[in-house]
Length: 575
Image 1: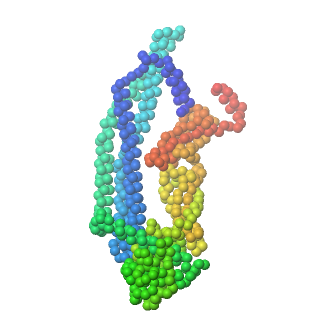
Image 2: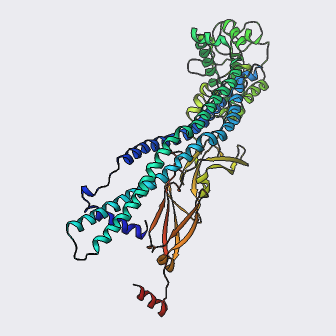
Image 3: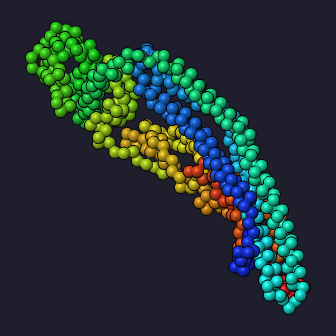
């Protein structure tokens, strides 16, 4: 507020006390139009927020579909390995194309035909609100002028010129108020009446965009649906899928037991035992093959090897399978061994190492991925279930593993990057499994309005340490800006004035973060430390799409350190 504005506000506040009911100015027609305008303003503001949220929600929906597609693709990985239709990959491709093509193609038209027109319409609210505020001030001036004339009539002043002067002031105040009042009574109904023809094209465009979004989404997913097996729905209904899942869980138990025992008896380990390592691997080879396992359960080990029935090196007594359920692992999840295996098929040490290496060797058995996710990585072609069933760090090994170490890394970002958002690429150097340095490029998707201290976590992107990669946590830090400083969602800047400008006025141009030019101008004295606020010109508010903080301009005065005698005399003569 300027000094003149401050004095007027004080004058209106004190003068309002002297205004009586008879001096009040009322206009019911205007009051009705202002109430109608407030309803329109609220609806327009909510519509702007909702349409911006709708655009964000479209992106969120397709981004979630892509994320689900990546997971589903991993679940269906075995179909590709076994020569079947990779329906998971087809789904991922469909939703990725939908995200990168359809939604991005809709982004521009949505902004141009829906969002931007609504924002433009809402921009008029600020101008009308300023006019309404100004009318309220002029109404106060008018009422106070009426009160002044009334008091001079009721109690004439000794100075006879006061009443005519007050009447002229009253006439002027009335003219100013009437002009502004009549202008608003004309323009507010016009704006209200324009709302339907103005919003009609945007509403039609919104319907068409929604229709295209749904139609193209349906068309892309319908191509995937044709490859899904109708029999699966029946299997789900009659419980057949439950039986198959139980079988998969049993396979996972076998895999866990192999992992534990192979690590224990590997010849390169201090606890290694070459013969037991070979026996463990042979047991796993047989039990991970469905046909061999059925033979083993019915006829024993030698039959599973392709030989005549003989002794059982897994410790089962008699000629049947390996004990309860034909499982040579025992109730406590460990293998049972015997050294008197029969002849015939010779399972070699090389076979044992081949099975071990198909799991990825020591690195993956200590918690890495099992042979490419689902199915194909398992010896004998047995389909596995990945992480949830022991495919990644499962079994007794994972229970003892520590959580990955979290390493914090500060990332300096500019105020422009925090204002506009965008993708920031960061190159890091990290240690690989062999201890050598390797480069990695990381992308940070900065959202408009993020603040210094925002943390973004990247699992498995740090140094390789203790059999696993560290979790990398990036912490944003804000670089100093040449013009603005940030205070939460507000931006602040200081405009320096000379002593002369602080007294006689000044003119400045300030470029905001959005690129808008603000014209700062005063013709009255400016006090040092006084501020001026510009709503909506601050930082974006991350949790309120479309909303911004304020820009606060503080005026600083550079006083001269020395005054000449002539300057002193000029100042003394002016005050």
